[in-house]
Length: 108
Image (tube, rainbow, N blue to C red; front, side, top):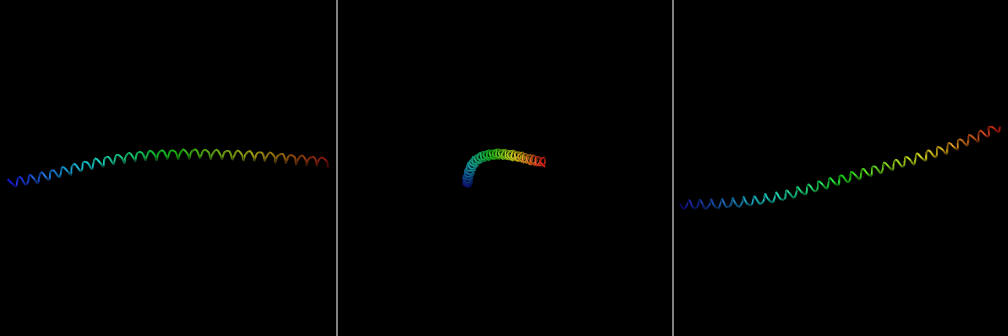
């Protein structure tokens, strides 16, 4: 009979220890789930931030590219205008030279 009570006593201690370990494990799992949710939220937030920064950078690059294209077109227009002006001046000078040469040729 004493052996039976001794065995039941040890069994109750073992069951109590298993219950304590089970409760401790459940609390640990709950805490880890909470930490995991926090990490997932931070990851989502960080991912959104990175995506917004990426879009901002791409928009800025597009604007800068458009500005550069516009400046290049302005430079080409300016160069074309000046070349046309120079060509007109040279044509006038050549016409003036021919007129002078013809006038001298008519004199002789």
